[in-house]
Every structure is written in C-alpha cells, then in structure tokens.
Length: 212
Ligand code: SIN
Ligand code: FE2
Image: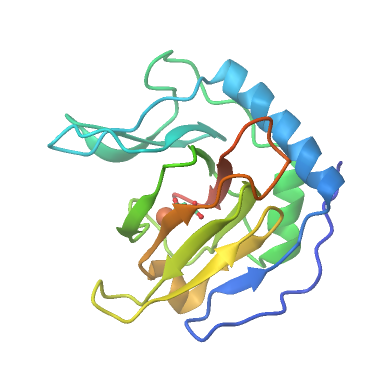
C-alpha cells in the first residue's frame, strides 16, 4: 500500500473545493484503517473539549505527524508535538498518505499534521473554518472512511450560502485556494452504509500544513 493512486480531480462544485469520489479502492481503505488502528494504539483517541466552556465535542480524535491538533477548555485550539494525555510524540503519518498528498497537491512541502476524527453514529461537527494554522496557502486534504456522512460547505463568511452532499468511504476532498477558508461541517452520519469498519461510524483523516 505504498502508493494510493487516485483518479484525477474531477469535480468542482463552485466554491473551489475539489471532491474526488471513490479516490481510494476498498483495499487501500482497509489498509489505511489498519494503519489508523495502529496509530490509535500508540496515541489513544481522546475527547476534544471546547475552549472556555469545556463542553466535550461529539467526536473522538487523535493525530499523527510532527504536529497534532488538540483543544482543551483551558488552552483552546492549538497544535502541539505531543499527545495531551500521554505526553508522547505523535506517531508518523503513514507513507501512503504522504504519497497521496504528493499526488493530489502541488504543495512543495509535506503535511505536518494528520487529524484522525472518529464519528460514532450520533456524532456531528458544527460549521467551522480551519484557521489554527500559521499558513493557509497549502490545501487541506481530507479522506472519508466508513459510514457515509452529510457534509456541508459554504463560503468564507459564516452566513454565506452552503451546499450539502454525501461523502462516502474512499472519497477525498481538497480544500484549496478560496475554499481553504470555507466554513464546513458534518451534519449527520448514516450508520450502516459501509462495512469497512467493525462498528457503525466514520473516520475522517485531514492532512494539513501548519507552519511555513
Ligand atoms: C473537519 O472539518 O475537521 C472534519 C471534516 C470531516 O469530517 O469531513
Ligand atoms: Fe475542519
């Protein structure tokens, strides 16, 4: 599974995000899930907490890469080199994901963070912008595994109109150019729509560049 090879980017839905349905084959998806399981063994899933209120988010998450995105009541959203609970460095980003980044982006440097989000059947993610990075010229590359979700994307302002579409296991999304700062979120998971994972739910992997 050294080289995930995707079809060319073939959809553009107007806000310049690029959606590659079924970019990853079933075998590539299964191999990735195995690698993610290994990562979650070394860097256990944790529940991110909203800044200030400390309210738990409905997803559980971990990271791989030199930097990981974390959030706590006290210190808010940030990137750090170590797991917030174990204090150890994050595991490496799987080579197949680095290859995919090279294949689908023309960004000259590798991603520094890979967020691993696990959505149970009832989990969702409110509309938000990804803006905790120091640089925004690199695309964010996002991979869906497991159950289908209803993904929503708008513009650079929260009140801009949004559109929704279903992301399936193996789909890849690139937020690039103007869409890099687009508000986006996950409204709903459709449990039972994929047999990739052992249980209902969805994994989202997001590769990001954080510093210059
Ligand atoms: C995110 O915005 O961090 C995750 C998006 C997704 O789960 O597709
Ligand atoms: Fe996001």
